[in-house]
Image (tube, rainbow, N blue to C red):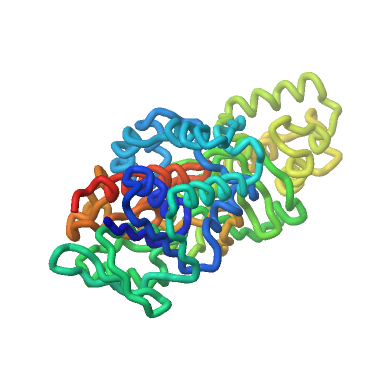
Length: 409
């Protein structure tokens, strides 16, 4: 009997186990999870709803949402992409829906739906699930099988092994992989909120802007999307995307850096000034403070006006050129200092991990050690917020599981 072991009971590990069991029903598939629960990220993702993938079905376009691993994943997505994920869940009775921003959720809006689906499938295929059992060490036998030393002091044999253990940070497997010849690219947090203490934001926690543009200075790249003011600073997709793309740079800065915010998204200076001209013409006697731009929450607009030095009684007819210039800068080109990071509750990802050059993505197999496969976050690949990290987990997990199942002893 072929013995397949998967280390890590998260999204990638479960999908690898299910793919292996389905493609080789006669194999013995064991799934080991160091923690006391399986699928913990699935449980809390998307505010407990599980943002399981994104409504993007073109592999080339899909791969562009990954700061690291885009080239390798592009080919992998031709094997397994969001439509395959949706079809897989639909075949098991899990209905899904798409939201306006492209994120996809189970129609139940409950991540437990996904967890129950996986557990039912695992039971159906007689996958052996082991909680509170991690991999401490491994030895490679002359026949390219593995002796696995587990955290409960037991030793088991496996013909094929898949590491889907999530981030290698603080993992005993990091050193093991290095000893075996695998290079580990630098590890750094990704998808985190920015801590900002600024009088322009004080007291505005809870306000959201539907489409803002964020630039991490001095990098010229900008990242757009909804932005949320929090008690600690700034969060929301625009911030999380910025943190993902600039993860390594921000770690080097020790999370003290400056950002530039266009609160009006892609609105240009000429367009904003034209809007001001309309206000002057149609509402010359109306105070600037009480003339809210549609794209901004009223309290945020009032705060921006106040901090440019415009008196609350100043009307559009009284607005000087100098103060107009200050207001334009406040809306489109405001600088804010970041003094640290806060892990986002729903998204926590680490970039870095096993060097992708040492992995054959056709089988998610090590180019150094036969029968050793990888899936998910332990590799140097990560996506922005929006369901992309789960899709990478499903894709790499499926390819690894299928490869292990079909390998001949």
